[in-house]
Image 1 (tube, rainbow, N blue to C red):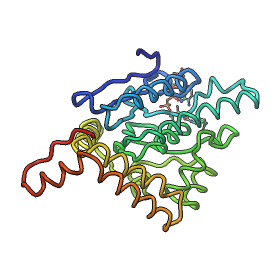
Image 2 (tube, rainbow, N blue to C red):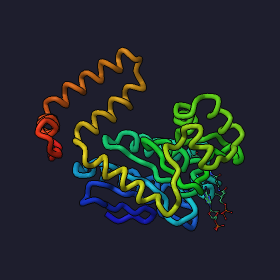
Image 3 (cartoon, protein in one colour):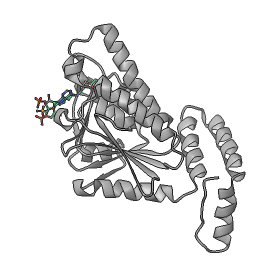
Length: 262
Ligand code: CAA
């Protein structure tokens, strides 16, 4: 499958997907065509059981994604803007709905829809040149791809409210301090760090990784007691897998496990 505005590649013998939003002349801004392609690419990844981790990054050396495409939005009616927002929301939900871990590798500006896309990933690794922000208020609009919701859930209500109402852009060190990103690395190391994380995860029991993600993600929408019930169900489910037997047998035999994903 080839795309105009994306590159979908595979690394680590097909176990790691690397999805690059690639419109560097527009700082990878998200227009409707790019959002459509993202949905197609995410569907493709979801249908590839061998892919165990997805890395998402931006093409060029300046931006992860500088937002929704302002030129494409300029003449939209309110109804068209609603459809555009819904399309963007579908993309962000499709990222969140992937059963495998998804890591955003933020290599520059992650503004507006770009920050929202990074927030839709499971966690963010950024370079020391990364800049995050929701500057939509400068354009007369609020965030429209889920930023008001996911930012508040990740960094808290007060910090999210400050960022979405001032449009203030923050650098990687502040993003790390407020818990928006997990790790800040040198630009030249970003892909290596992402691939190392992905390799570590890909070596684990795939079903255990998926249900661990599901327990954390779904559990956050539940109260503690119901979240723990969900965890118990997933724990018991994992006990029925070959990989559970292999993991425990290998530990007791003092040898590395060989997981087959069943
Ligand atoms: N949409 C469309 N084009 C964009 C863009 C965007 N979001 N961001 C940058 N570009 C284009 C610029 O228009 C420029 O194109 P030309 O070369 O054809 O003039 C090119 O990318 C390079 O950008 P700059 O010359 O502006 O680069 P810079 O280094 O001077 O500034 C920047 C970089 C600070 C990121 C600046 O480009 C900028 O502020 N971009 C807009 C950021 C923004 O407001 N994002 C939010 C968009 S709204 C949104 O996302 C809504 C939503 O939630 C759904």
